[in-house]
Image (cartoon, rainbow, N blue to C red; front, side, top):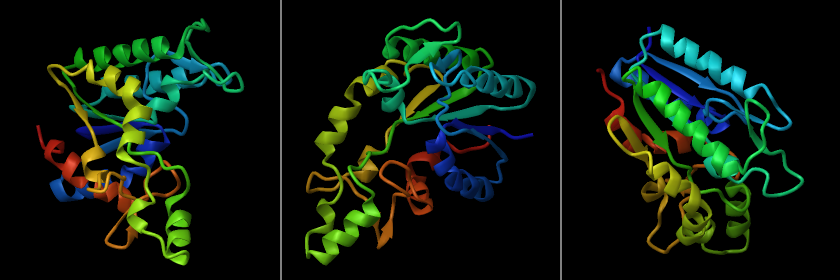
Length: 231
């Protein structure tokens, strides 16, 4: 049986290499339940996709029948938190199909998830979003090199990232308490010039403008490793 579960959307899938690395390093078995466009929020769906809630219910059933002691929740939080603000987008709804403002549905879904896990005395770790870039950093770095521009200014500014995540981060922080820890990667990705980091040691940290590459996932090791321990 595994001890640790990585539960998330495609952002979770993209940091799985880190968890596989830590699993080998710490000799801890892991499970992963990561599905694109499916935030780990119980009791929610999208107006165009009603498979989210059944999927997450299945994950919870697996948790309840196993020996999971620790769950890491990963998602593109701000995307879901604001879903529906643009009339062209799908909207976030509860599993009954009731339409409410996305932040309200999001909050109740996260509360439902944390409560279900804490009732089983499972430790919960929520990873905040890494900075989303305006363009694919690989392309941006190539253009900066061709035009002889500073590559340490390719990333979005720290201020831009903080402003885009302000509302959802405030909500995530409100859940801090016994058995619930919030992990913020911003410090790792911050440069002294006020921009965010998109490469390290010549290795690009992003797969596209908002998913991490394998090197980017491993770059999170100092943030995640202290909590990746045997019970």
